[in-house]
Length: 107
Image (tube, rainbow, N blue to C red; front, side, top):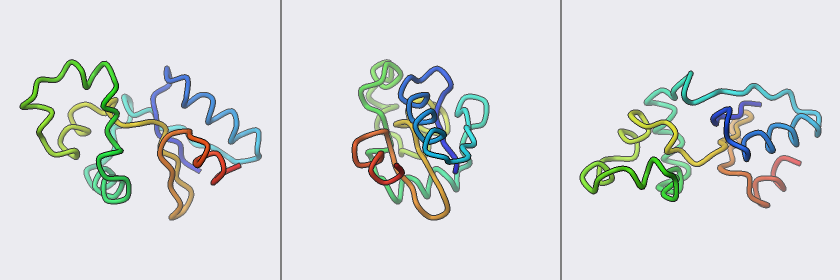
């Protein structure tokens, strides 16, 4: 199982602890150290749409209107921390965030 996030994100840490506690072998990918490929971003965007962007983040609020209007894939390539976290993948199964729905999917 792969978990994509940033190491300082409390939600990512909670998700990782819960998943490991449930017996999953979790490989953590820090988006700052290992940015997603364009192909991976495209696949996530196809599945989650604009929900993939965290529009309540400090990074988002710091962007001007022209930058915000860019395609999601370009924004995430330039600002990986704009991605809603965590993204969890195991095979073809994926979830976005650590909502009750995501927890029900994995735990």
